[in-house]
Length: 134
Image (cartoon, rainbow, N blue to C red):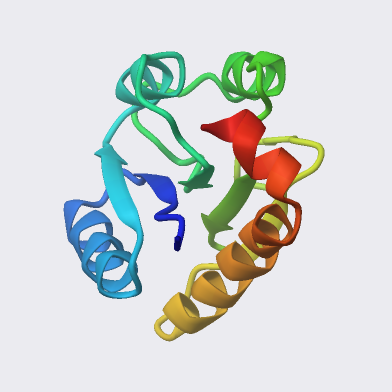
């Protein structure tokens, strides 16, 4: 049986959210969307199972420190891929450990898919880990 992973995509830009949803749905993922940190927190602490979060931390209403702590405190932990512009001095500090980073640019969707696959593949290779997530 092939496991269908559930990915949450959080980005303030509706075009990017829809584009990533289409790309990940075509790749076989079940996708949920969030357009704010409030919606994001409701989904990650809600009853639906999630396997991974793709996050652009430049969400409206975001307090980077608060959101970082809430994501770190989630049980079970939720793997996070930060999909954002290259960090610079003007951007808010957002720290998650562990988290992967994929720079947001015109052709980053393929890098994003590879990174997501790399993170989720070990779950497929370890049936006990998959059983715990069900």
